[in-house]
Length: 316
Length: 295
Image (cartoon, rainbow over all chains, first blue to last red; front, side, top):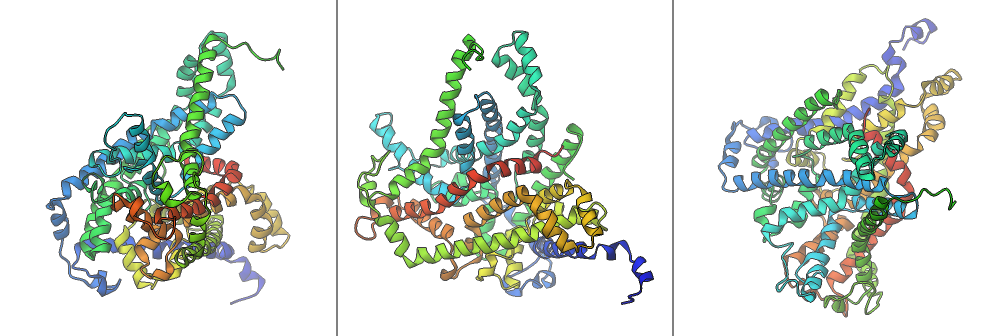
């Protein structure tokens, strides 16, 4: 407004940064609309809300208190959903977490050359492929007429095809194994970087002292990457019941779950989708989702607390 | 060279072959499934449903691809996927880069508040139902723009980008500013050219995410004309999985089956990714480390 030089010098720091502030504020506005508002919308889980009321209806609808929470806890599916959600997450933690460490050590023990490069490059590929395609591939490999059952039958190892995709007792294993297949190479990147960071001198002097290769892995490599292992473990714990829409447990459950393995494959998030978007019980589904969010919240803060204690710095 | 080679110990003589075997095994189980799908996509569908094909097509045909590329449903899905990937990635990368550039200035007023907001948004969400209600209110349900607008700012890449830009020496920017360049000019002429690793990582990830995206279409699109490739594939996969004898019953026309056309679709969806990611490897490997191992 006032254009003379004196006032220009008296600009506040904010005004001086105006172009940058505009970028930042545009970003904040966007996050407010697409992230914060839906978080506020969670209150619909305590309200008598229907989608026909529009978004503002979330605020004007009548309060019903924890009615829907109670309904969910008393639902006959509740124990099954909780068991599957927790069980699959823990199984994945136990099996998919250590494998990238072993894989990274294997890569680091390989001589430089085309084989090493090919192993690494190939190992990243599944990470970039969507679960839709992976579920399609698993159909070709694991269905009753799939390549694995055909092979096993021809070798007379089995009489009847194994119902990898249809048998409830197989689902947890299937989800974990596919996760291992998809993400091992990817997570190994972090551990491999840590292995590379260990000084070569330590290996050389251990060699002079007569340490064998396995001893060097055990006494130098593993302790050397321990801080990274702890950091990644804490991050993984924080995401253990990760509520995100595209978390692999949800995608797997949605894409590989079917009426035959429902008993083992349905988790809280797929239930939220089914009763919410598919059946139109919006408020009830939100309340159910809220339980999952609350548990995730505890895990995120808990792991952050641990991270500060153990590694000295948290994520926030 | 031969002389320089250190003599192998007995342990090496055992360990090296074991490691080579393991790595070949890893390569095999990783790549073979994709190879198999490509082989089946070049084989007659009815013949393939009888099994026994492992390495090469038994009855070679291009019918599956012909069917795929002449079926209006698949073609339309392909167009939606390609266009939304290109537009969505461009919008998202541009927006994310600009915001993270701004947030990388330590002296930015309210910076702490901004960063806290980003972190809260990264870890917590309202879940799918309130999100759906919001999109409905904004008129994005059954709207092509749902592929573009809601994902336009990635909180994960905001954090990585902020760290990345903060590492660029501030003297670069300051000297250009002294020469009278505007903020946008500095950004375009000086900052962007040195940000290739971050841009490449960002484009790869956002692009692959958009290309693979099936849930936006599943949850927010009912209009048949707006369905993308990933969704159409999921539909075929789901319908074949439900009926146990699907491979035989899915016969559509001639020697192709729904399942064999689906393998062609899967190959079409996977091949672009296979062609792109090896070349961006060095970028995403370093990007991944910035994101996860914060010292």
